[in-house]
Image (cartoon, rainbow, N blue to C red; front, side):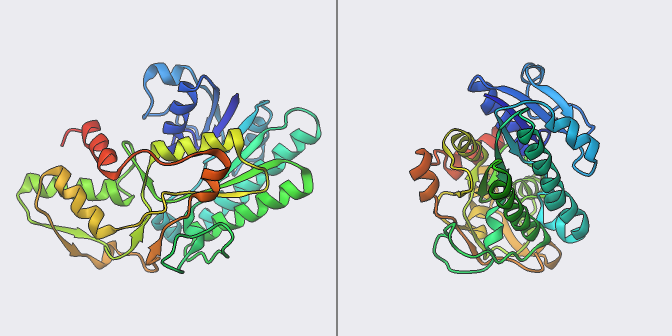
Length: 315
């Protein structure tokens, strides 16, 4: 396949490109004006055709969409809840308006006979919001509680409307939290790693954290990208699929698992400045629909993921 990946210079974008290249696919990497992808090796970067994409610029979107491809994975987004709370309007502009701009342009290309790609719109499990402690299913209503989640829910709705109206083959993925080497400390697991490593070096027993009570469905980024590839091959247009394990871990348990791997007996201490204003107590996804459609299932344990992250960086 010839695959266009937007947000190609991001964390998940880098891992997805690696998976695509390993599978023998041709990759067009669309990203902002900063060239390249720091997670890829020079040899991997050289195998990618790079194009500039600014979802706020209609001309940039048209130029990017003009490249004939078999599939598009749309990752370009404001992907941090904290960032979205600080800049809600910009989040809506990128995550919702930017997505719609790209999809409408792709629909025009399809109508003009230039290309007819399957488009994977990457959303988030955060769209479910507060609810049951049972694994969340795609048939449940969404209740987003952040600009990030709300803008993603709106992008899902817009994408499915475009599929109904134009025939553009849109599939929606709802990945639950995922981590791995290269993720920044704006996200919980790398933040734990960074703070615990600093505490270890300083001989400090206490590590500041946010609220550790929430339960999350936490995946390895390699399992998530495998799920995206499975959906490119066997996902049904107009459908939504969770990418999840179906198992929950409290953030407290994650913290102590990280501390054990780092080799430091850390004591967490709540810092209100690190806690979310609005949080979801329990967020675990039911992966059965994705498994039934594609045969996908997660392969990596949290301990394997943590060890990979530790091996990737000296500490």
